[in-house]
Image (cartoon, rainbow, N blue to C red; front, side, top):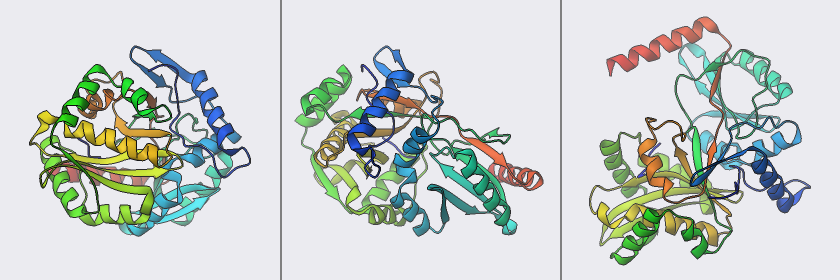
Length: 353
């Protein structure tokens, strides 16, 4: 992940339901009721717990709402060359491994036991070595399997969600004092806001960010595919000073939530706070497009100050909002010998880098 990156819980990380008989407003009330049940008040923020033991219909609603279970995300993964299929509405990503084997990945979903049995049957047919499951927020993983902690984090363990339903002045009032001061600094500077389709310029800025901060990056072709698949539900926003890009981000919209998915910033002119202005302008665009939540995406859990995302978490903290914790990723091993060989080979590759 790249990045230049307070009150009653306003939202779980789940957009409103628009394709069920409940309608948007009732789904919104469900989320608020759930948030009231699992929120823990901490100074200056609200943390929504990682599990609430939700089962049945509510789990299905939570599962269906997020970006990683959307049709657009499914299409993006297919465009990137992955095999993708759905079982009971759950998106399963198949990744190829050497020797004709593969792995499964279930992203931000918590399959019901009956659904899991079907996934397991597919694993046998397709020679899957293991499955990595990143559970949905608020939905306990309930499968009759021994699961292992994931050796790597493929998804951030927490996120920060901004409620866009208040007025712009009220949203800014929810920023920290530092956040408001940084925004005023940026607004006084000669900075230009630009929606762009120049993925090559973004890729260059992302490469600079990666060299400075140690985040991974993709090539321009990946970003082009992402924006093409999401169409009007994705946008690239840049902050310029003259012709120079100082900060930029790629934002994805899904069912009322705008997610800050990728971001990058230059080392120059950081004192004028272009990255702060970038997020505020993106929030305004998202609000104008009808979104009621802005997801700043990956942050460190509040109790892990040494986490790899701690630095970007401090940046995102100044925008206020609610912290959402996710259940930890789990591994289900289907073929133990092949899995041990896979882990050994991966470890050797890391040592040789």
